[in-house]
Length: 73
Image (cartoon, rainbow, N blue to C red; front, side):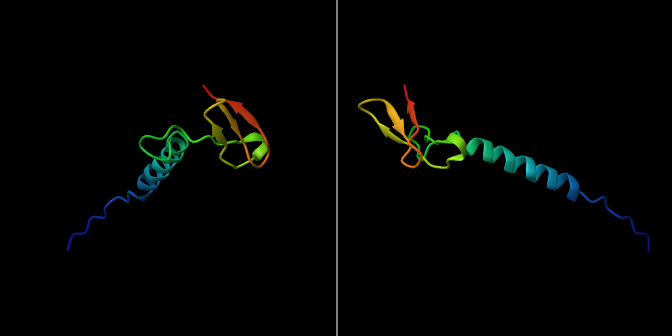
């Protein structure tokens, strides 16, 4: 009986899966919460991990945790 071993593709598969996961993480920050929603305003000020609240009348986004303010528009 002749037996030929197949090459393992696990290393390339792992690489492809990790690259895909990294691409999904990059894209995740660019998407809104819905189809019609704008991009989510993520604070990121000095390590703050909170979404900012947008006031449409003034065009200012404010972080409820650290108080950072960002002008939108």
